[in-house]
Length: 394
Image (cartoon, rainbow, N blue to C red; front, side, top):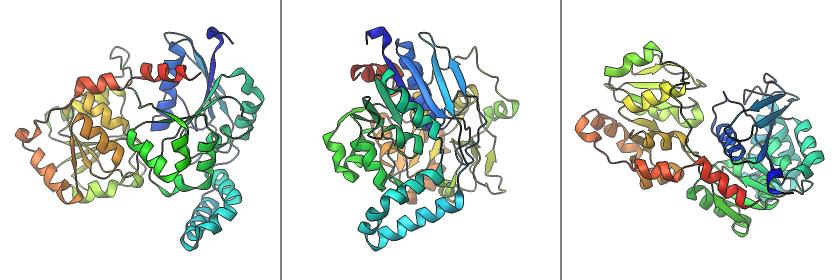
């Protein structure tokens, strides 16, 4: 194929302009950057806008305009929602077998991994069948994240097209399942969003050390204030209020309990994002719902500090965004990718014994004079740079 005919398929579990989860936002923005560089891009994904119910709420097809070529999002029907009882049983069985003897799990891993992927969802066989039938029209298949059925089947041996696997590895039990090794082994190139993630992958799956790899951290969102929604009055009214901020999915898996249990009595924490966890009826904690880009920027510029306590991240987009906006990030030490960002660009990473005390200290403006590497992080994190690196392996 000539240069103009080069084409890429990006496989991700969900995708759309209004889906804000990390892997999904990454896939959308990488597709946009590649299309702007003149590459034909198809995003192959499920019709779901929910990562647990796996509904079919979204359209079959969406065309996204860019400053270069348009790119398409092709969505495929989900056969069933998450089968919670079966999914829980499979996870417990795997955990039990690994506890007794890892060889028992490995012996049964073909069926257990299949049940894991099918019961977790999204289960949309039309997607991987479409990719298999149409693979010759693509120069490259990009798979974003390791955990879901469409991603696994896009990296099967029957897909002969060159494959780039953006791993998005978390230090969690699921990353140690046998199917992950197959995904890695079937990839021509591995991509990591941080050096910490690459180190983790090579520590758990030694085979990854022998596969070509590149670092592709998320770039920054192109914020256009002219097209932005307005800031709601209840958010704008926080202008003269001292508050800490939690931004993102409010989920037990994000270690929300740690923030709730370690917030001093005289501190206020504003929670913004998808609410997946019941916050206590406590004046220290206020939930303001999901926020648009203009509201997010406003909150990050006004807050004392962004609070992060998550243990399992491959990267933290919100940490990078906060630093870019000269916002202090106060993170619980021990999540290597977040520690990596703070060590390189500035912020506060502290152990659990000092987290509450540090919040207390930050109430005094004199303690907020922390230098952040704003220019450097802006230069280092670029979707355009990522698209150029991807284009080089076509």
